[in-house]
Length: 377
Image 1 (cartoon, helix red, strand yellow):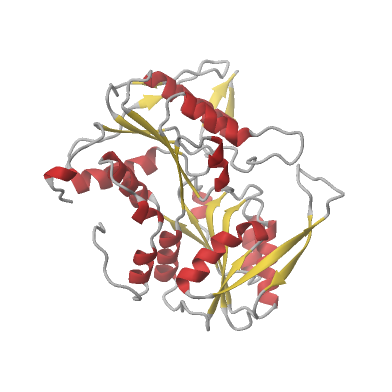
Image 2 (cartoon, rainbow, N blue to C red):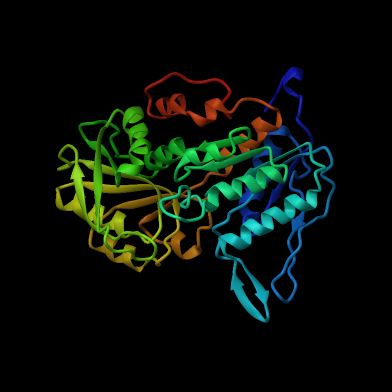
């Protein structure tokens, strides 16, 4: 990648810190940036959060970051890493990851020129608003980061992006992996037809309708939605249980269906909706979710796939993807490392990322509907 002299004005020397569990992903990001800049030396800054026998920890940065433009990548939902506490191996919880993130920021001691936190799945993002006398955890977490000197927070597909109102004077970017998802489907399922006669976009609930509307508008497809009818007299695991899913939209018979959502947690809702769509005559059912948590295991998905309830689930690798999931025939991983590298590289030169946040031109080019765009790597 070549830049003019006017474009070679860095905010500061680039330093990338990958929090525990994200080392492999950050190494991919580093390789892309080094390739584009023709650099042999890695941009990764070594840091760690060693723990005492009690489980307490401290943050250490082993290299100078004075005057640097620092990017810290933190996957708060990586349960695949553990630490030892009183002789026991304990999986790291989102709380543990967030505390370690603050330790590394504190270790920097205010010396970097700018600190940007890339937190793909927003910590406590599901506790984004107050419905009763309860805590506002996500807003508090954002305040903590800003008060510690973080300039920018970049997240992906926030459960509710309006939580940024908690820090109105600080940088907050909510990025969507729309282009990468569509590209993955096109490459994985070559015979998929991106038109309203053969396919339809489905939102699994009213809360995700805006997300689905974007896909439907850009891909020029019909849009359908499921309404979750809940039992508000009962609370199970902190939520009112879903009684039934009611469909609102055009007929899906004979069409390919794409269900769009931000995450799969237990997967009960997605599988129920997929079953309803198949029962209504849908030809194939594909699922786009940014974050695949699969909190209750993969067995129910294996059974549903064998029963023909769905055809493919696409998730990003922005959070931890266990090997057991990668090996599933019904699963397809969407690699986001190049996109993260592009965001970091652009911001380090203090350039706008507006075109990255709205990839309509790239989607049209991918589908043969638009002209080539400038500046694509």
